[in-house]
Image (cartoon, rainbow, N blue to C red):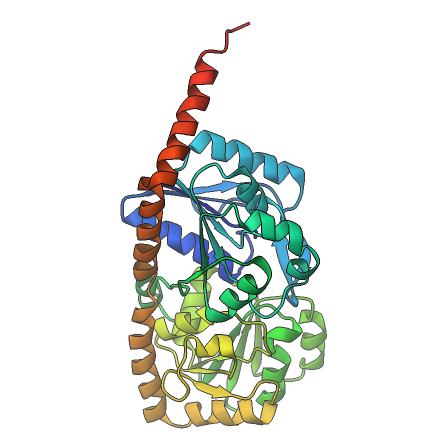
Length: 380
């Protein structure tokens, strides 16, 4: 089956939607299907199966900055790719995002699956509700990565949604060669912005023993300010933007992974990554993270925006080897339930139903008619 996966965000920058799109494509291709990703890229495409659509423009969205490509050139490249590739199914992640994703919805070049990732609230859904509601009706099968994401989309866009949780390529995480730290080490990896809670972790560091180190991965609008404020703490190592391979190596080597987010998390895929890497987790107690981690079984969950509570949770894991081992074992079992292989199987069943159903037959007939008209156009 030929599957086109459309991602609205630049694949050159780290992000949950980007990771899901690329991971799903890799697994589908491993299963023998011709899956291609169509997305913006600020530089060379990260995989040979990626069709780059142009550079991105940072745009405020959901308390963060989304690297979207709303310019006409990116949409025109997408239109050309969809016409050339003749996919059996087009799978659009965040289908209401401006740029290629929304263009793919409007084109409806093949039976279409839309996966909604955002949770909480959405200004664009609120202020552009009427046109987006009509456009969403063009999506043939709607999915959401969590109950929170389903509720948001359902509230503004109507329709029904199948909840298909995000997945992780478990084997890749388990097989990564770990970076060995000198002592007990906390790993944070995420965008440096208020909602990710990095400042809460850095405040909590002052309450931890002096031998505890912290690896800080990622960049963002708060990087310069936080680096200046905590420049006097030699235990904090600023890694900057990390590749997927380095992220896996650091995750595998860390004593504990910390996700101190303040909110806005629809699904804790980063927690599944840590579980797959067999790394204990201390995270904020958020609905999105509870989709993945059961408190005190798969992770230690603490109140958000509370440096003292976060420090206590980290200290409990770092000082108790038996508790850390228990979290590792439970997390590894939990990660298997969210494997990308399982997720790909669920999506493949949905693709097959659409492609071989009445809708797929009508779309195939329409394509054949277009091809016939093009063949009958006289040459000049």
